[in-house]
Every structure is written in C-alpha cells, then in structure tokens.
Length: 231
Image (cartoon, rainbow, N blue to C red; front, top):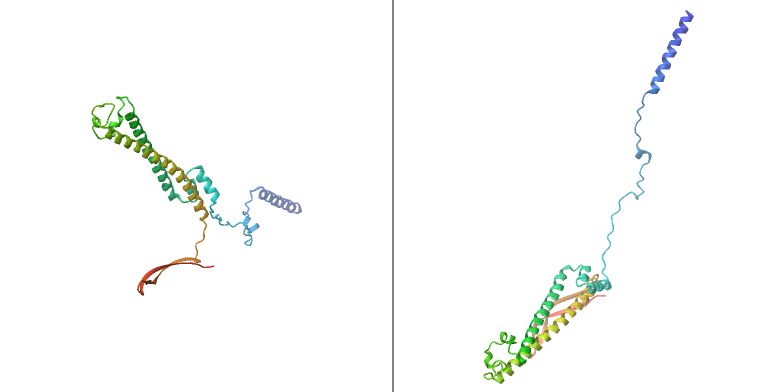
C-alpha cells in the first residue's frame, strides 16, 4: 500500500510539472503600453503649441524704389505696390513714342519735298503731293515760263516752316520721353517716402461757412477753408 501511494504521488507530481512547462511555452499576450501615460505632456510647457506666424509689415525704401525705377520704368511702382500706376506710366511713354514717330515721318517728308523743290532736277517732284495747287503756277524747274515767283517763294517758305515745325516737336518729344522717365522715378521715390506716412486726427482740414465783407459796408455769405495741426 505504501508503494502504491508513493507511485500515485509521483504521477501527480509529474503531471503538475508537464502542465507548468506547457504553460511557459505558450505565447503571452501583454497589454499595450500607453506612452502618453508614461511621459505625460506638461501643460505648463508651451513649446509643443504651434505659435501663429508673425507677419512682417512691408516698409518701402525710397532709395530701393528709385533704383528699381531707374533700372526699368514701372518697377518702382510695382515695388511700392501701386500697380494701378503702371498703365499710366506706359501710356505716357506710348504717347511720346508715337509723337516721335509722327513728327519724324513728317519732318522727313517735308525735308525731301523742300530739297526736291529747290534742286534743278525735273524728275524730283515729291512736293506735288503736298501742295494742292497746279505746278504750272509755282514750279520754276518744270514750268519756267508759266510759274509765278511769288507763288514759288510762298510754297518754298511754307515747306521750310513745316520742316522746322516737325523738327521742333520731334525734339520736344524726345525731351518729353526723358522727362517722363525722370517723373516716373520721382513718383516712385515720393510714393516710397510717403508709404508709411501716418495721417491721424492731428492733421485736419475743414470747410465751414463765414461772413465776407462786401463793398459799401454790406456782409455776404461765403465759404472758408481751415487747416489745423495739433501737436
């Protein structure tokens, strides 16, 4: 009986040992670790908070605006953010360039006509397209017997006056281009200088009624304009 009890006890011990070994070989399922719980965010630390982007206020520099306007007309106005002035700048240049072409064309035309009228070559008669009159009354080269000297002198002086007229306005158009170019530079410089000019209540202009003395001791109603600067 004692041997049987010992044998049964050994079997039970071996059974327990096998169950514990099997349990150790199985895959263990663990609970995921909460990293936030391990490393909680310190609310007092604002380094993780996304700060708003600070916008830099644009400030125009007069020298830079002037240099850009010198480099190319209109760049100064673009730099000063006055885009609406670009059409005005180029409209001025366009009108002056057209004036140069128009006056140059007519200057050449009248100069050629004057040269043809004063030479002794009958084949050169471009002046007939400009003078709306019968050449028999003024052309001494083609019609030496019928022309009238007074008419010849009149048309000759007229063509010479037109030559001087178109030459003068052609030159003035060139000067106008240079002046408009300088004006665009000045405009860019002034715009940049006054870009951040502060207009506040310290500067005020007002229009109000007033009494105006009239001849004879009478008083009339009028309008007065006042300008006030407060320091």
